[in-house]
Amino acid sequence: MRKLVYFIATTVDGFIAAPDGSFDFFPLEPGLMEFVAAEYPETLPTHVRANLGLDAPNRTFDTLVMGKGTYDPGLAIGVTSPYAHLKQYVFSRTAEPAPEPEVEIVSGDPVELVRRLKREDGLDIWLCGGGDLAAQLLPEVDELIVKVNPVLAGSGVPLVRSDFNPTPLTLRAARPLPGGVVVLHYARATGERS
Image 1 (tube, one colour):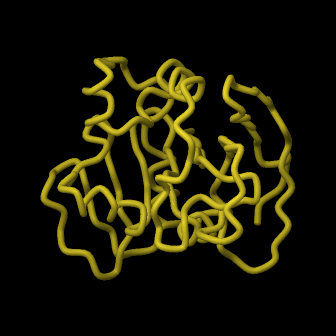
Image 2 (cartoon, one colour; image 1 turned 180 degrees about the horizontal axis):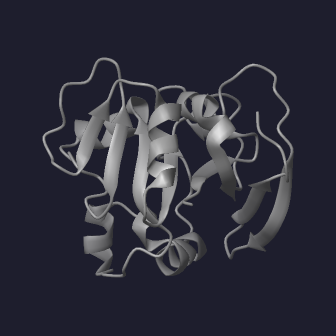
């Protein structure tokens, strides 16, 4: 069965974006780019992959789910299919139909869709963001891979925007990268479901 993996960059204080949803304040560390290109090439946007000359196959994910707030920054600069090499589901109650066939705008229950996707054949499912969608999908998140950037934000979009709800995790790996980013890989603690 496929897993839902929340693969996300965060600040040391747990924010994945600025209050306005932007994330360009994250330092672009060469060690991080090399790690992502080698280990998770499909998590690089299609236009970035092209600029890097990266033509690697999908290693971990073939599908992603994201909230409208995560999709909108690319859309604002004309990127209508940020991950054309993946099947993309964007959750929104207000967005128009997507202009690209590999992007599907979904207004329904994200948990229901993810449960259906998990039963299908394929690689794992990437929860790309944001904090509100992560809160809704938390009961379905099997693994969490957090790229902790050496920066404090003070406020912004939290990793998970929800009420107090401790969810035990088990650390599977910790990998410091040149430049100060630390990649933490967690799995849901055995037997734990929210």
